[in-house]
Amino acid sequence: MEDLPEALMTEILKKITSTSDLNSLSLVSKQLYNIEGNQRGAIRLGSGLCTATESLTSLCARFPNLRKVEIDYSGWIPGWIPGHGNQLDSKGLFVFSSHCSSLIDLTLSFCSYIDDSGLGCLAYCKTLVSLRLISAPQITSIGLFSVAVSCTSLSALHLIDCEKIDSVDWLEYLGRNGSLEELVVKNCAGINHHDLLKFGSGWMKLQKFEFERKRGRYDDALIGDEVYDSSYDAHNMDIYDFCCESLKDLRLAHIKTWPEIGLRVVLGKCKALENLCLQYVHALNDNDMIALSRSCSNLKSISLLLTRQLYSSDVSYCETRTSFTDKSLYALALNCRMLQIVELKFTACAPDWPSEIGFTQQGFLVLIQSCPIRVLVLNTANFFDDEGMKALSSSPHLETLELIVCEAVTDVGMRFIAHTPCLSNLTLRMCNRVTDVGVAELGRAHKLESLVIDYCHAISLQAAQGVAKSVHYSMDQSAALWKKIGFDDDWWMKWSPKFSV
Image (spheres, rainbow, N blue to C red):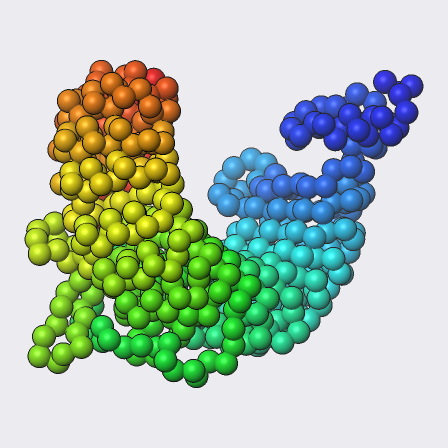
C-alpha cells in the first residue's frame, strides 16, 4: 500500500468511519499512521487519559487538525478503578487549546479540576464555535466572561449543572457583541429565567434556546398554593424591548412565570418558531398560547407537559386544572396549519370526570382535523376515548401514534385505528383496557411496521406476535403501581423484562 499515491490513500481513509478501524489501520504502515493522524478531525477522551504535559503534547502532535474534542469524566473514580488516572486540569486544557489551532467544537463533561483560569486558555482557540460545559463545578461567571470576550466566533453555548455560575455579565456581553445562535441553560441554580432576558439584542440572532430550572424530584407532581389569573395577558405589556425572529427551537422547563412576566413574553415574539416544548411551566394561560399561535405560522412540533394548578379570574372561585383550555387548541388549529408533531402529557391530574385537564376531546379533535399531524403522543389523556380513536382513524397523514395510560381506549378503539390510512407505528403503554381482541384487529389490517406493547397486562406476547414487522413487548406486574408514585418511563424501560420478535 505504500506504493499508492498519498491522495488516493487519503480518500480511502475518508471512507472509514469506525474509530477502532482507523486505529487498527494506522498500525499497518508509517505512511498510513501519518495520514490518519493528520486527517482525524474528532476525538473523545475520558478516564483513561494520561494528563502528563508530555503525553498531551504528543497527543496533539499525533492529531494536529482536530476540530472536535470531547473530554468526558462521567463515572470517574480516582484510585478505585485501574487506568482511571488523574483528571485533566487547567494546565492540561492549556496544552490542548494552545496546540489545537483548528478546534471549533469542545465539550467538557464532569471535569472537576478545570477552573476559570483553564477556561481562560480558550482564548487561544480563535475558531471555537461550540462550547458545552456539563457538570463543571469550578467554573464561575468570570471564566464564562473571558470566553465571551476571547472567542468571538462562538455560536453555540451549553451550560448544564454548573452550580457556581450566577451573575450574567457574560450573557449581557454576548447579547451586545456576540454571535450566539444556540443557547442551552439547564440546572444552573444561580441563573433564573428573568436573568436570561438580559440577553437583549442577542435574542435577534438566536435560533435555538432551552432553559430548565434546577428542581427537586417531585416538583412536577405537586400543586402549589399560588392562584394564577386565567385572564392575565402578559403580551399586552410591551416592557421588554427585544425580538427573537430567528428562533426556531424553544424549550422551557420547570419554571414559574408569576408574579413577574419573565420568559413567558418570548412566546409572542417568535415568528420563525418550528419546535416548541413547554414542560411544567407554571402560570401560563390561554393568552400565552394564543399570542404564540398568531406569531408562529411555521410551527411544526409542539410538546406540552402539564400539571394541575390553581386558576381564577374571580376571587370567589378557584379552578384546579392544567394551564391551557380548548381556546389554545382552537388558536393552534386556526393559525398553525403546518403542525405535524403533537405530544400531550399530563401529571397529577385525577382520572375522574370532570377532568382537571383543561382540554376536551372536542377541542383536541378540532386541532387534529385542522393540521397534517404525522406523529401523535398522548400520555394520561383521560378526555380521549374510543370516539376519539374513531375520529383519529380518518386522519390522512397520521403515521405514528403513542398512547400511554389512556384508560378510556378499548378494543373498539383498536378496531377503528386499524384502518387509519398511513399509520405504520403504534405504541401502547399501560393501556389496560386493550386486550388480545383489540390487537387481533390490528393484525387483520396488515398495516403496521412497528408495534410496541409496554405493561398492558391484558395483552399477551402470543397475541402481539406477527401483528407488525417489528414487535417489542415488555411486561412487569408491578410497573403500573411504581410509575404512579413517581418512577419515570426510562427507569422501567431499564429494569423491566423485554421481548422482541
